[in-house]
Length: 115
Ligand code: 5GP
Ligand code: ZN
Image 1 (tube, rainbow, N blue to C red):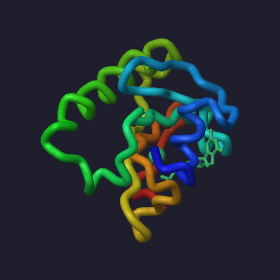
Image 2: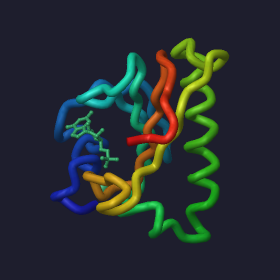
Image 3: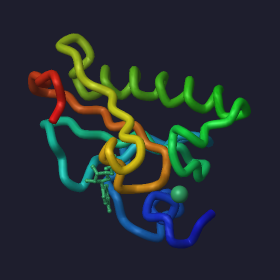
Image 4: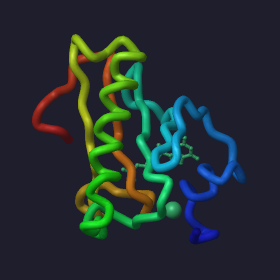
């Protein structure tokens, strides 16, 4: 685990977070700066810097993140009205933390195109 990675430190419990789900491969926390009434971050427990670094061996993990997102959307009460899953990639994509994560945003209408 990279000791300077914010999300690795959160996953390890070294830094506090509002954790709402955890299993052996996925951890979900509430975003510290929510951009919607529901704003959850689905984190891979494994340190992967970006979706660009996902390898074939990680494909099950990506599927698991999707499954957890589906379960949490139901739990959060946003499944039927809809929500948005976002992966920011690199500088122009708006990625600020280099640890694979999927944003789940819901509870309000999402505009398109995104800013
Ligand atoms: P990115 O910009 O890399 O796609 O997303 C990083 C997200 O992490 C941002 O939405 C930001 O608000 C969130 N974030 C940054 N620091 C923390 C933190 O210490 N705790 C939590 N829960 N979220 C954080
Ligand atoms: Zn990490």
